[in-house]
Amino acid sequence: MSSTHRFGWQRFSIGAALLAVAALLTLVNGCSKKEEVDPYVYGSLRDVTRGNVESIGFLFEIDCPEFVYIDGNTAIVRDPKDPNLLELLVANDLENRAPNWQGKILGVQKFFTPTVYLMVKRVKDGMTTTDVDSCENFILPNFTDPKLEEISGFDLSKMPYNARSSQQKDMEDRIGTEFQTAGHVELRPDYEWEAPKDQELKEGEEAPQAPMVWYLVSADDDKAVFKVMNTTKSLEFALKLLTAQNLPFVGGVKVDDINPYRERRREEVTGNLDIEFVTYANRYLAP
Image 1 (cartoon, rainbow, N blue to C red):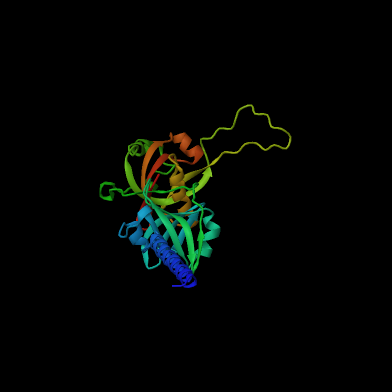
Image 2: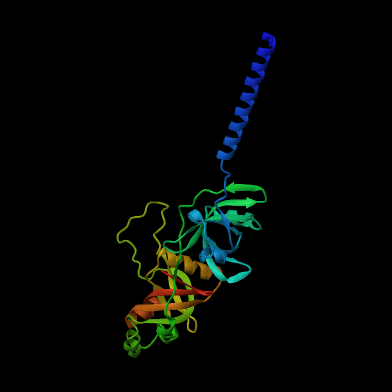
């Protein structure tokens, strides 16, 4: 074989070998690259919150729910197809963002403490996905399951602030006993607040005013008025929810004390109480 033919064959063999190696490397690299799997698992609001679907990292996709009430970064939501189910959802700037999420898919992460809630992590609109920053500043109302059959009912109207002094003992007998009752809540100046003594006001400075606090007023007698003593952020969320939706208070209370006869009539407040739970739809919110 001539030298020319020999060198040509060698060049062909080397070229073929290089092509084969390149093809093999391409195949190996292609196989080594795993297809990215979306960790979000789709489910209904009920399935996600009730644990009927599973996902690594508790990441889920849900149809944007109906926003029943929004306070700050916290919302009570429900599925229009399942209106009796109320759940909690949090995200930054919810009041402004929520209207733009209707009809879209929300990517959420499920948390379990102090109660079950969902945090929005992304929003999907067709082929476009927008990440949402994690929310750190939010208030969660506490859901509870009171044993209603063990809590008797009592009408607060039987304890008006203008009740006769002879009724004082009967009213004091209710102190410390939890009972269910109805009425409405409202904000009023704190009747127990005392203005600072001997305070000198600078020119143009207004005198301090009593802070506004929550009161429970009987449904049947607006003279049965009690100051709410155990206001927490969670309880305030519930009370603001009632007033925002113009709903009556139905729930459990426990009377702390009854004011003396003269103080009752002077302050127009029967006494102080704690709210044990607030009924909202088919859920119960606690302090």
